[in-house]
Amino acid sequence: MEIDVRGPRFSAALTFLVLAAAFLTGSAWLLAAQVAVFAVSALAGLRWSPYGNLFRVLKRRLHWGPPPATEAEAGPRFSQLMGLLFTGGGLAAVLAGATALGWSLVLVVVALSALLAATGLCVGCEMYALGRRLVGSRP
Amino acid sequence: MTEALTLAVVLAVVAVAARCWRARDGRVRTVADRFSEAELTALAAPGSHRLLVEFTAPSCPPCATTRRLLDDLADEHHDVVVRAVDVGESLQLVRRHGVLRAPTTFVLDDAGHVLGRVAGVPERDDLARLLDTADDMSPTRHVA
Image (cartoon, rainbow over all chains, first blue to last red; front, side, top):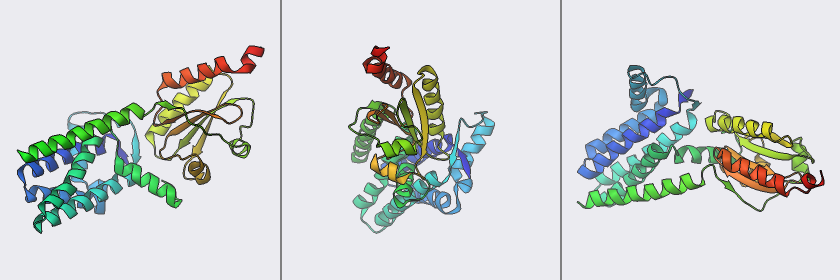
């Protein structure tokens, strides 16, 4: 499946806002909501991504026009999986009382989503492409 | 308060990382590297012209942008040839030259020496300047 290249950047901006709010308020519920978003996107595919669907609705309503380019969903989906692992681990740690460890894991995702939103650099996607290259299959 | 401060520190680190990324992305770097005769032959471009070698991947929008830019430059420099290398199909080449990203572009002289290397979509002016400088330094230009 091919996706609009603007979608992952939009999703990263929302992810940053949600996780930063969760961190500032110490809300495990807000963190759990983001974990659920990551889980749907990573496990069911970006077609079902809540933020991706919001992006598509806004794109239609606000006439953002056709995508400047498209890309395969594999890289962005892998980065959603990484987000799920980090925030899921963070949520488990917070609920278990290891709050410093939990929020540290969440801050890694906060930093990477801010980087993607601000520059377009998707570290998870780059890791995915590099990993596929190193194991010898097509990215 | 501590949380706000921590978040501010994280954002500062991200800002520095973003700045470093932008400073490197698309910029020509000089590296000591050379493509062997066998590699040049595999690229179907042995001798007599300079090469712009783009390491590319399927479903890579910046790769298509880079290709258009390289084709434009080749149109302006009659002795420059563009070759595309699929990173998934040329793993040996990828590993030998340490290609980590697609697109990555190498500028080679006619003996295979790497004149410059660019990760990401190249800055057009940087690449053009490098090709023009190499033009000035080329002994064959002065013979004519």
